[in-house]
Length: 235
Image 1 (cartoon, rainbow, N blue to C red):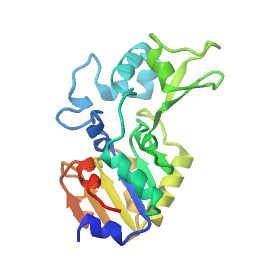
Image 2 (image 1 turned 180 degrees about the vertical axis):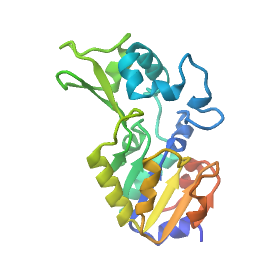
Image 3 (image 1 turned 30 degrees about the vertical axis):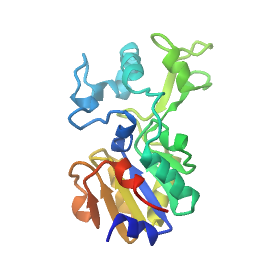
């Protein structure tokens, strides 16, 4: 059975995506050959994205964060646009994403569970005032609130827990789906990868350039770019 046929016969689709969904928008992923984890810095990217590093080496954190984690000029690609279209016509229940770039919302998606937070939300640790991503991008050194408090991005750093309400919504959506499309993710990051175990529907489709630990459990595996595959779907 093809992806087009599965989508045609489904009305409760949930999309679970990772960094590979945004690579066609010019945002690098983490673990591929050209990913962030293969690049050379004074500290490893994985270390710099840790909670402890944020508090102990805040200036270095923000140097890396502004350089690599704030692609504010990036635009949604064919995958983001098709998912928004699927939701608008009543076939897609929700997008569950590990990405923090906000491109699903920029494309028009309404129900998006951002497991790892978003670069577009930032808050003062002292007074809790909110700041947009543009404020962080334009700041120099360590960004502070006018009250003097340190500003922190609302992204889930290594060592931090996922937001409870977001987890609850994502799990509920996946458990309610009749078709689960998993795309652009290595399925090696936990606990996010474990969310797929909540699926009780009929079919699982995987769209990913490389192999994943979940391949054998899928009904259809497509080794292609996510945008290319979803861009060809007709609704």
